[in-house]
Amino acid sequence: MRVVFIHNRRGVRKTVRLNGWARVALSICVLGLPLTTGVFLGVQLGGGKIGFLLDRSLDNLQEEVAEQRRDLQAGRRVAERKVRALSLKMSEMQARLVRLDALGERLTRMAELDDGEFDFSQVPAQGGPERPGESVPAPGLEQVFSALDARLRNREQQLGVLESLLESRRLDQRRSLAGRPVESGWISSSFGLRTDPFTGHKSWHKGLDFASRAGASVLATGAGVVTWSGRESGYGNMVEIDHGDGFVTRYAHNQENRVDVGQLVQRGQVIAAMGSTGRATGPHLHFEVYKNGRAVD
Image (cartoon, rainbow, N blue to C red; front, side, top):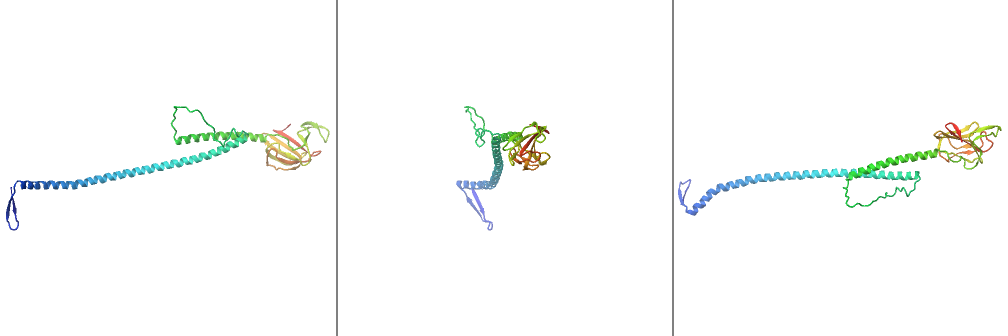
């Protein structure tokens, strides 16, 4: 194989004869140069594309991580709100339990129940045999709170009704007439037909007379409202009390009245001092009871 070299300026030609190995080497160089160039260009172009794909994949991965982080933060905020709501619910239920305990203790005192039987300061006793093999799934926390809240509302309503009934009964007991209208003394004249001490004739006595020393305490026989406190013809200084349900009591011949009209009085409260004002022969209390406008014994 011959290779001719020509010099451009001088036009000199030089021929080189190549043997077998030289021809092989030259052929490899001639054929390998385009291949090497193509491989190089392919690597350059392909490497850029691969880099682009890698960058794009990395961006997608970072976006997914950021989205997961946002979802996690949102879930954490939701969980925190639920925890705060449950904490507030727990505080509210604890306050309601305190009120129920106080109400229960008050009702126990009102009903005069045994403290050992209804001790609201202790946890209610519970128990029962364990049944092997029985497995009940644990309810969710919100379900437990809802059930407990419903039980609390039910207990509040029941205790409220019981309180109203006991309070009504207590008011009825206070309004009801009981006991003597004087701290000390004796009955000097009974209810009904008697001889009038001034005329000597038979007359109807509409009350009871209690004799004692002047100035002795006169007591209300039931809770009520004072509807009269002043002088009344024949009665002298008199106090009248309306007890409701048609009951009215009168306390006459007082030395001094110690309550005013419109005043609320309780059973056993001192309302006057015993005297002999009005139509009286000496210090005593004239006591009358009216039911729906009629004098009763």
